[in-house]
Image (cartoon, rainbow, N blue to C red):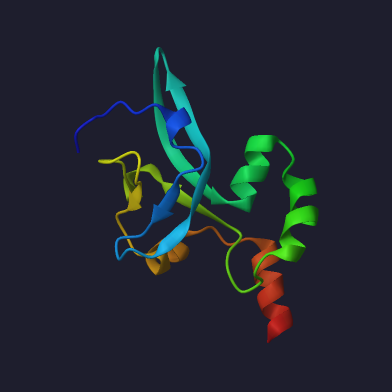
Length: 119
């Protein structure tokens, strides 16, 4: 995979689609590490939890945003850097489907407990 320089500030807020063209969410936060003078992206956060992280209010945002959103869909998705295709930074796309990405997500207690309540 060729190395590429992308201005991260231009990615924030961009809508992301999966490999089949289905809408996945907006890039709200980018997690990176710095090694000397270089910065390497580790993952992209899509959705309301990513926005809360960017605004530094994760717990408050969950109380304010979650009650109004759809309850049957993840409120946030973490995208590993290698799953994001930035060949056109104005139209970021996943290298996988939304379903494949959902299978990569870490299990959260909130999602597990809400599924238990629905059963």
